[in-house]
Image 1 (cartoon, rainbow, N blue to C red):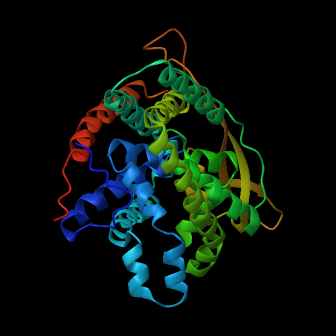
Image 2: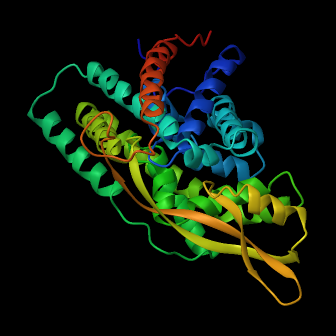
Length: 373
């Protein structure tokens, strides 16, 4: 049974469901970090998609009017506050966890087959689950599905372009990315890659909690403002589509998911560009120099590399940042006829299996009836 609520209802979220909503938010945040995967995909799988849109829509004119006239009791009564707090608490916990504790962006470089295989399995299983929710599949739904697939493939095959890092463009990036993040199958993080703001955003988040906390917050502020504006406007349009053309809209979203499988396939020839972010001169006897000579590791999103040596007996240590600019899927040799012998074939297979199994668990989780009494 669906847990979606009537959009005209006020928020009836209870403390009893807080852990469940936080878990669902954590799963959404985890998905948003990986380029090619959408938090909206998780919301759809977990059966809180329309409820999320309704909660976002509760940030309306009466709420803003009450808020800016300091009538906080009326403002909080208007917004779906508890739902948004618990859900986004889980989302932000995931963002912090996978950038500070378990750096997922690092594992995307060191073990890409397992990471992308996991999400490939999640999306593959969710496509099956979502198709089952459709009561019928006629000509309109078929056309919508094909349209979604075509648009999804077009998005994931866009080539990343060089872009500025001024506040205005970061604001625009936030508005566009958040719209994609709530669209199942269209990855906000992948669009951030295309707009060359994915690494920028993660680096700003990574600054928080250290000496550069204020700098990180100021760098994130334009993005967050843009995300709020995009979220408030786009959620209303999506909610209208779902209320008027539910089956066709879901079919388009399923098409988005199918199209996204192209870029989530765990076996990819990935092309990166390397940029020197910083450099310093140290003595050739410095322990870091010895470490870099004996144990260099360039299979990371950011790493150090030895540069040139000057006449004063110093050597340059460069900090290199790698950015993904293109990827092309292939079939590994042990499964098909072409591929890359360096690919972790069985890691990808294991990731896909785990992802599909997890979808079964997520399907059960989304069926948990929310008790709002």
